[in-house]
Length: 92
Image (spheres, helix red, strand yellow):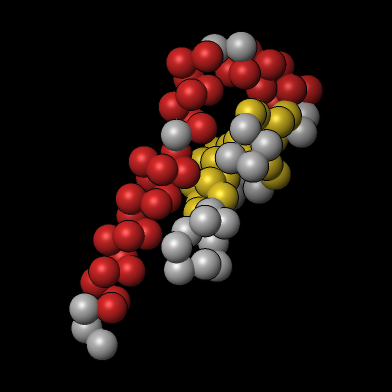
């Protein structure tokens, strides 16, 4: 119980049926505090601690890595949302 806690949470937020307002968020968390975050609306990483700021700067300068995250809204969010939406609408 007195150890360290690290996690990474990806989430997709949207409210429209056509997914036009979809946002992809990728959080890096240490001891329950987000220290770095990618938000597809911003289009790059933002650091919230000294370590997070240094990682954000490093990752934002890696164009291949950053492009993969930017594509997350299409490859991860929209892809999975379409599958889920089809399975729900096919049952009604």
